[in-house]
Image (cartoon, rainbow, N blue to C red):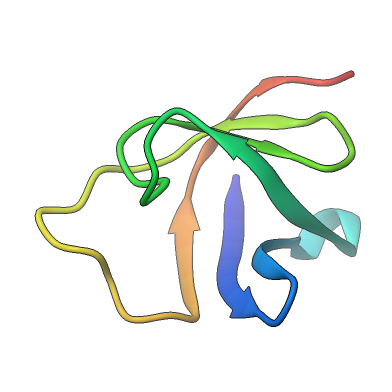
Length: 69
């Protein structure tokens, strides 16, 4: 699923265009979110792609949704 990740004053935010959804990342497997899972404030969890070094934000990536709560 294509998602956009951006930095906001509240923290890292994910925008899902197909769902017109904007949610803050509230928990992640790794501090920099890349290469692990990231949980959104609505309960959705995404498997985030890995990067050798943190990419410049905002960025659109292909992430796999792991759960829907």
